[in-house]
Length: 169
Image (cartoon, rainbow, N blue to C red):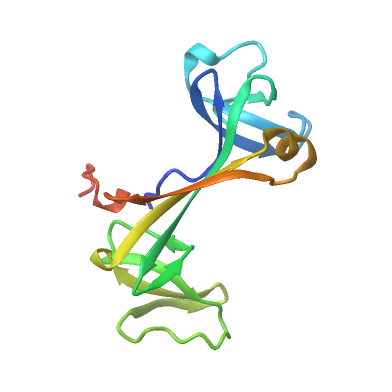
């Protein structure tokens, strides 16, 4: 499954890095870390963890803590949960909770119905993809686990990742 870049990120030394919330164990102290992919940014604070270089968060060194999420609009409805499988005809969209009285549009095929809910298959050309970037107060987020929103931006994605040319299509 191929997906767009979602998750929480920070700007560290002008490079976008993924923010990780680590549970502590015998090898690593719990807390927030950033994943360092750029070899030029690796320093003595970095730890190798599961083949990745991570570094404890230093609030003075990071800027713009934000979260990226995606949603689609199809048939006049907004859907926050969907999956893209390259071998399928369309997206699998989370349409309803199992046992809810939400009716599924009969024009779409139900591809999975079970404990996790009802998923329908929606053709690619009937879907519009949006990306939302939510900026948080980094101090409150890291130190107090409070998601205080500073601003939010939503963009239409003109060319969704499922239309991009890859070696698979």
